[in-house]
Length: 114
Image (cartoon, rainbow, N blue to C red; front, side, top):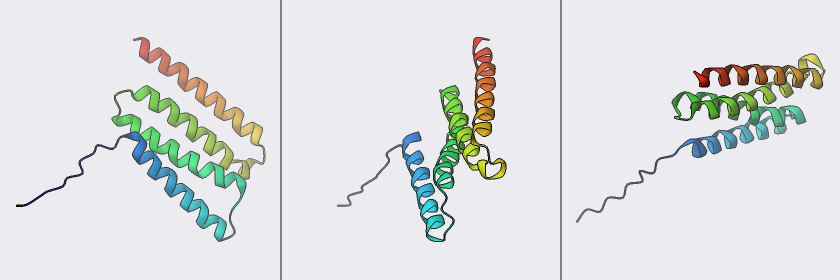
């Protein structure tokens, strides 16, 4: 008698988001161990990777606007923290991110009314 065990559990957003988060923490560990560990990089890398994953997931999701907005928020915050190395001004970067988030939110709210 042959017994077959199948693990056919459907993994949604949460399972893969956890994988992306763990990979980004592992990359942070590699950066810290090689001496490139700056606090802004350690925070911005998981935000950027999780935000990009959420943006790509919004293409496949039924509730795509929800994932698009959260992906945009996470990505903007991560990129604004990371770009502080280039500009040297965190407040400027966060302000630009806020403007981008609000403009895209207004555009999405107008699209959803139609």
